[in-house]
Amino acid sequence: MLRRNSADPLYVQIADRLRVRVESGEFSDAHALPSEQALCEEFGVSRTTVRRALELLEEGSFLSPRQGRGVFVREPKLSSNLTLLRGFTQFCAENDVETTSRVLSNIEIPAPLFVSRKLRQPEGAHVVYLNRVRTVDGVKAVIEEVWLPANEYDFLVREDLDDRSLYEAIEEHTGFHFDDNCLPVITLESALATGEELEMLDIEGPASVFVVSESVFSSTGAPLHFTRRVLLGDYFKYFFSDRASQLSVDVETLRDPI
Image (cartoon, rainbow, N blue to C red; front, side, top):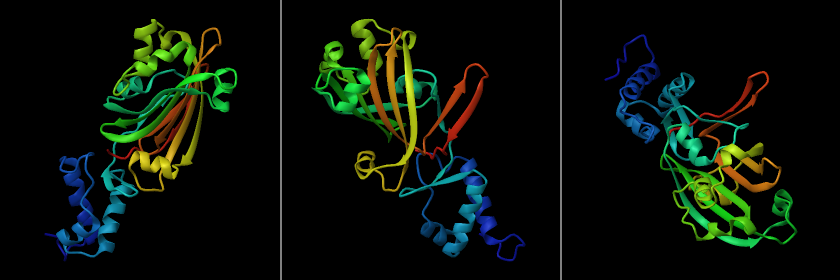
């Protein structure tokens, strides 16, 4: 019961009780906290009082709201250095999270003009186009599109790439190791997810995303693939590292729990 004669305001008392429940693990990163209405009924207070309690916890970095989903326990961000080449599977392994993939397309197509230019292929040359939705600890968080020259990678259309690393499939088939022989050229943009992207990720808008475009080249400068990923901004942190000075600049958003 709340102490209504206490010197502590009701919203502070509610925040303290919710904090204890967060720290005890009652509220995990897998589920949203009870709704504002449910908390109003539980504590017998107004919605304004509940909102002030939640705002207090958000200011203290205990909670983080997520549009269209509710309020969650705040968790660490997933982190990646943009100067290093890594597949998404490796990226998740380094951050100790599970990832799965669902293939939407894995076909050979004539390359769009912008892809031909990225891969330095003749206009209309065929490419393997792979489109996947990838999860982070069970939540759809990434839309991934990859284009590869079909004259080198046409075998991929016969591969099962659900829940499998693309780099692993290529390495097993060709013996080529991307980490040892490649240079990535990466651009990072922030944007709002489009209607189609919101639908693919099963979320309500608006939602902030990172758009990461990656051209990967061999040690001889030959283009190997072009990848575009749309990543929910709630989950990811990217940083750029100047190898000479070891200076890093963080581009962060708060990772909401999953």
